[in-house]
Image (cartoon, rainbow, N blue to C red; front, side, top):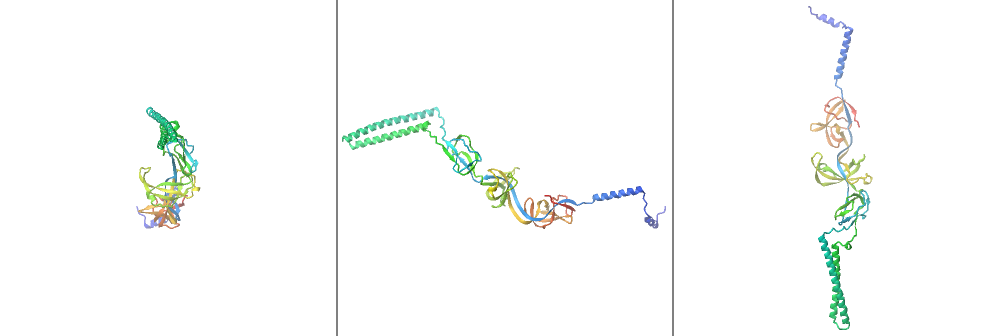
Length: 399
C-alpha cells in the first residue's frame, strides 16, 4: 500500500469536510456538552456580605448581673421584751418619721409551780404580818408621845423625855412605811394583779419612707432586739453589681453606665458611684472560683426612672473606654493572621488579606490604628474557604 504523499495531504486538507446529517447532529451535541462542562467547571465569584469602613464611636463595655437596693434601710426592732400587738402596716405603705408602727405591752407573768407559789404566798403573809406589827408599834409610839407631851406641858416631864417620845414616833412611822413597801414587793413577786402595770411601749419609725418588709405581723411575745419591720426611702435607689476584679480595675468613678433587662425596652442611664476595695470569692455556674467586687451605680435621673424596688434583678453595662470619630472595623470581619489580626478587603472584585492594628472596642466595632482607611469595603464572616485573591461578589450588610 502506498503512503499518501505531501501533495496528497495538502489536497485532502483543502478539500471540504462532508458530514451526514446524523454526524452533524452528534457533533453539535458533543460541542454543547463540552461547553456546558466548561461552564460548570469555570470558577465563579463567592457571594459575600460586605460592610464599609467608617468613622464613629467605639466603646469598650462590660456587662454583668446586678441587684437594686435602697441606700438606707432601717430595721425597726423591739426596744423591750413584751407582748407585741398585731401590726396593721403592709409592705408598700407610706410612713412618716416618728409615726407609731408597733405597740408592745408587758408580757403576762410566767406560771408558778407549787413550791414557788407557796414561797411567794408565805413571803406576802410575812410582809403583811410585819406591817401589822409596825402599825401596832406606831399606835404605841403615838400614845407615849401624847402622854409625855401632856406631862411636859404641866412641867412634870423634862425636855429630853419629850424629844425621845417624838423620835420614837418618827421611827415607828418610818418602820410602817418600810413594811408597806415590803408588802408591795412581795405581791409583785407573786404576780399579784394589783402590782402589774399594763402601760404599752410605742415603737416609732426612725425615718420617712415606705414599708419594705413586715418581719413579724402576728401578735406574739417579742424579745428585746427582735426585728419587726424594715423601712426605706424607695426614691433613693442604687444598683450593686458584682464585677470581676480584672474588669473593676479598669473602671473609675463617674464612668457612664446603663441599666438593662429591668423589665422595659429602654436602658436607664446611670453612672459609677463607688468601687468597693474589698473583693469576695464567688463560685460561678460552671464551678469556677472567681474574685468579684461590688460596683455601686447611681441613676442619672431618679425621678424619671421606672419604679424599681429593693432587691430587683437587672443588668449593669459599664463603659470602660470610649473613642469618638475613630476609624472602626466590624468585629464580624476580623480574622486571625498569625499573632495579629487581619481583614479581607474587596479590591477589583477580589478579596485581599490585609493585616491591621486594632485598638479598644466592644462587641460590634473595634478601633483600627493602621491598615484600613475610611471607605474601604471588608468582608463579613469570611469563613475558612476565603483565601487571599479569591473572586468575590458582595452584597450590602444586612441590618
